[in-house]
View 1: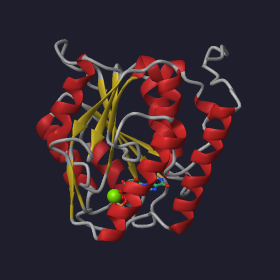
View 2 (view 1 turned 90 degrees about the horizontal axis):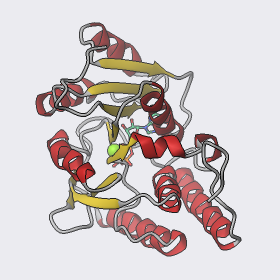
View 3 (view 1 turned 120 degrees about the vertical axis):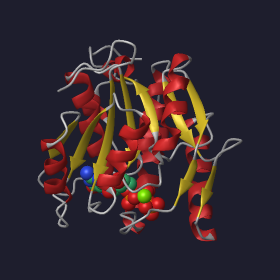
Length: 254
Ligand SMILES: Nc1nc2c(ncn2[C@@H]2O[C@H](COP(=O)(O)OP(=O)(O)OP(=O)(O)O)[C@@H](O)[C@H]2O)c(=O)[nH]1
Ligand SMILES: [Mg+2]
């Protein structure tokens, strides 16, 4: 893999994909237009539309791109965790995760990265000044606001956008976490990682982003994902109330 120039951090961008064939090439192109030094890892769950093979073809022509193939759809949370592990094992300094459907636009990358000069986790946020959402109906707004209100209350998070996956993490902090302990397999992963990061003393800052509805393809969120997310957040809140410690990678508890 090509090395980052010395004046840039060792930065990995993870793109989790399930049927994102139409979006993926443009996403990688636009990420590199903004940050040519970034390495990209695509985590594909054997997408029936051939996203994984397409990612292999892109990687064959671009040493900055890598692909992780998983056997089948295992959930967004576990896919992001695979990106965390890749960043740790390959000694990256910073990891940015983003959706591969253009809802998370690469134009926000410089601001996301700049934020890491002050904190440990930069949260791409729709719910701070300058952020927003384009193209949702009232039901999507209601669901997103509702889950954020619920997670803030139950997990005592102070940040306003806890359900989005556009984030930049300091890899040294991810290294501290025991990644085998995560409860969430799906969308509640976003709230759970903030909960665990808060418990190990991470500093957060929200970077405004404008979330746009996906360019191509269909959403993978369904009712089951929503109920499962509510349940996992509830279980984490019970852990917290019972004083269950968070276990770190070195087996200490906080
Ligand atoms: N590898 C992998 N990627 C997934 C899985 N589920 C979702 N993704 C990807 O995760 C990203 C977010 O999924 P979306 O279905 O767009 O969910 P969303 O952005 O929260 O919802 P929409 O706004 O409705 O699109 C996309 O890049 C998906 O392709 C999964 O089980 N495995
Ligand atoms: Mg999406």
